[in-house]
Image (cartoon, rainbow, N blue to C red; front, side, top):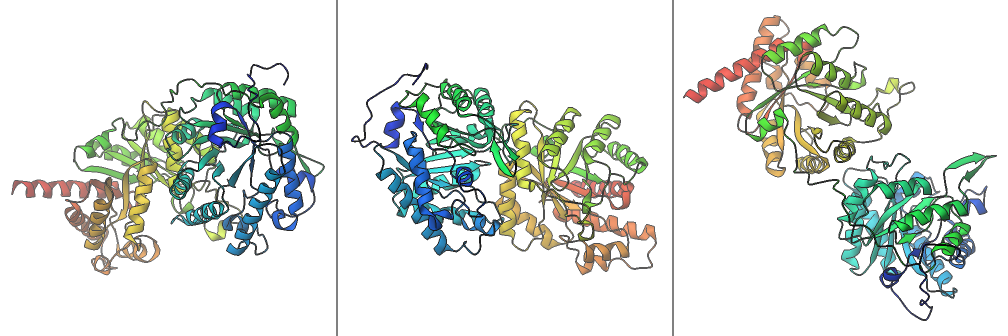
Length: 625
C-alpha cells in the first residue's frame, strides 16, 4: 500500500478459520463490487438477467466471483439480488417466476459462490444477497417471499445475509427478525439506497435511516449502497452520527450513469473512488465495497488501500433524530381532544376558478361560530381546484383560522410533495390530512397522468421524516382518512394502526348515517388507541340523497335516510330534515366520537352552523336533566 493513514495488521492467514465477527474486530472488510452491471458490461447486447446466468452460463458468474476474490474481496455476495417471484414477474422473465425455478437458481448461485471461494487461496466469506421486493398488496404479501428466500439460504448453509438497496427500515427489520429467529448466530447487514439529495425512494433521510437501523437489535451492520456515488456518500456519512454498537458498511456506485453510443457508462475512476473511500473509512466504516458500475478494478483499488487495515474508532453517537413519537407539541384542536372535549372540524371546498367569495365568506362565518379547524380538500374526484395548501395559507393569513389542508399522492412526485410541505410550513401550516387520492377518470388518462409515488401511509412516513429532520421543535400534525364501511373491520383496524405508526395523530371518517356505522367506530376505537372525528354529511334534497347513496363509493346511506326526503320538498323543508337527521347522528355518536367532521354540501356553511347550534342546544338541555 502507498502512503496511507491506515495501520496494517499482517497476521491473518488462510489456515486461520475466522468468523466475520472475528475479522471485523481487527480489520476493515472488503466486499465485492457490482455483479449485474459488470455482467452487462462483459456481455453487452444479451437479454439475460445476471441472475438468469446462474443456470444458463454458470461459468460466467463463477469467473466474476473469482475476479473479485483475486482483486481482494473478502466477502462476496451470491448472484441473487433480483431472484424473487414479484421481481421476475415485473421484469417479464418468461415464466421463470416459479418456486421450483427460484429454488434451483438460488441453489446454483450458492454453489458457484462456494466453488469460487474453495478455489481461492484466501479466507473469503459468502453473503446471501437479498434485494427489495416491491409491495403489491396491503396484506404484506412480499414478507412470505422474503421468508422463503431466507429459508432456502439457510438450507444451503449460508449464515451471512446482505439485505441491500432498501428504501426504508420496516422491511429490513421484518426480514432480519425472521433470520435471527431461524438462525440466531447469523450475521445480518442492512443497507439502504438514497438519491443525491439524501433521501430514499420512500422519502426517508440518511439520518433517519441510520438512526432507526441503529436501534435494531436484529442488525449486526447497517449502511448505504447504490443510488449515489462515492462523493455524495462521503458527504452524507460526515453529516450523520453513525450508530454506536453497529458495524457500518459503504458501497457507493461508481459515479452516475450516462449513455454513450447505446452503452451505459459510469463516470468515476477507480483511483478517485479509492481516494474518497479513504474519507469514508476514516469516519469509522467497517465494510467497504462497490455497487452499480464498479468492477474488479475498483475492488483492487480498495484492497490496495485498505487490505487488513485497522478500523477507525467512531465518535460517540449523538443522533437525536426520531425521538419518541409520543413527544408532540400541542395544537389547539389536538389539545382539546386530549382534554376529552368534542372537536369540530368543517370541510370547505376550494374553488374551481378565481372566485373565492363563497370560500372566504364561509371561513369567516365558521370562525365566528367558534369551530376548531377548517379542512380544505385537494382536488377531490381528481377534478382540478385551487391548491389546498395555497388556499390554507390564505385562510390562515386573512381569516386567522386553523386549517387542515388535504394532501394527496396523485398529483405530485416526491420532489413536488416535499416542496409543497416545506412551502406550507413556511406559511404556518402545521396540520395536514394525508390521503392517497382519487384516481384520474378513465376518460382522462391518456392526457392526464397520476403520479402515486406514495400511498397515504408512505406519505405519512415521509412527512414524519421531515418532522424529525426539519420541524422537530414544532412538528406537523398528521391526520388520516378512515373508511369504516370497508368489508373487513380487522383489515381497517390494521391499516389504522399502520397509519398511527407512520405518524397519524387523528382520523376523519366517512359520513355515518346509522347505528351500524356507529357500532363499527366503537369497535375500531376498542382496537386502535387514537382520536376519531366522526364524519357527518347533511343531505340537502331527495336528489342529493339518491346520488350519494348510489354514486359515491365508500359512503353508505341506508334506505331509511333517503326515505326521509321526497322529490317535492322545498329547500327549507329539506334543510330542516338535514338538520334533524344530523343532530340525531351527533346524539348517537356522543359517547363514541372525539369530535365531528362536517362535510359542507354545496358550500352551505350556514346549514352546518344550524346543525352545530341545534346539537349544542339539545346537549345542554340533556345535561340539565
